Image 1 (cartoon, one colour):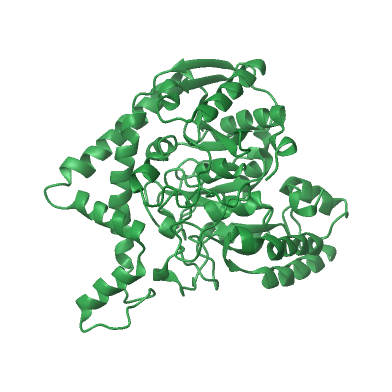
Image 2 (image 1 turned 90 degrees about the vertical axis):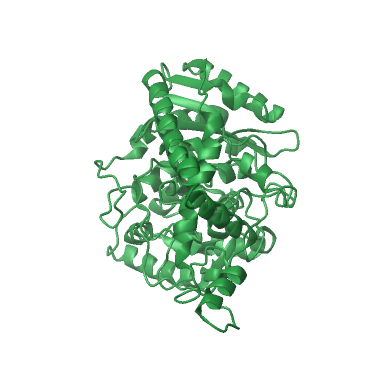
Length: 485
């Protein structure tokens, strides 16, 4: 097996046993990037030469006993809306094309404390708005399973880089499914933590009450390891939870006997592809074989979640993106006569189509006369969604759904139809609306060999439960051994 095909926990074992050095591992990834990046186009900014220099320094310090820690020298990729000091943080937008962050996001500080090596900043939909990574100003990322298909979005660069073995793991952000959906499309594991578990300080905001940073990894064990690193209270983020620190790797037990899994029938209805449904039904049977208790139930708020999500997300985007005005650190139009023209032309030229669409929609629902009819009502629906999930979790430990109604679609097939693209989020958005944790793991492939993702949803701060359920299923079907891009 090639070095780049190994999981992080396998790389750790190789470093411990001295089979591999940190420089060997970093070199293997830089070589793989040189070989495959031109086809996949997962990166916006590459830091491969800096990574090799860092690997050499870390290797020297480890040998001298100056650095300890199991993750020292492990490479990673970072979604390009997470601020990284001294490195461009573009959000895949012309508006921030030349913005170099003067500070690190809290998650980057935590990675640095572990001496994890950043291989580069990964492509995404502009300002995290999209479900296919076709809305990037720079390039369209391709799905490593089929280069004619999208990798999903908005964290498409992160998922594609992990699937193509360009990085062993990556950080993404999830506002309405932007970690889980690309993980599903690319056959990898994507975890969206409970809102507040991971600091959002330094994440360029799209919708502040929905955004959450999380890991995209090759397997569930790596997901738990990376969550251990990035989770925890942060005084710089007022929405950060001060729950006691948990070791999520302790939850990785191959046992779901007696676990109560609820299957909401609304998530298996109209619009769900037959092959996706079939794969999920097989997964449900597998859980029954493993000793879990499965029951179908009704979660009828799901049909309202999508509408509430898009009203809340667009309203918050309209407010958050107001700071990009052509005056301070953003793109500024070349020709203008007055201040009003700077604002108007800079924003018209700097923002892409999808971002403008959402700003206009968000401004409309917040405007005088419409605030109560739309935004206020959406927040009331949000409370109903939270209450419905709370009621479901009185009975079930985990809720099982498809991650996406379809497998990865062809590049260009939906980008001209925003409504169809928005409907693709139907299975994931309710998790963000309610602030719950959700994980997507591969559960099979369709007839064309494209991966199908299964979503496991847990109650607030019950990451251990969904990690255990995901780990047990992963051990049973051995997806990575049986299927490869």
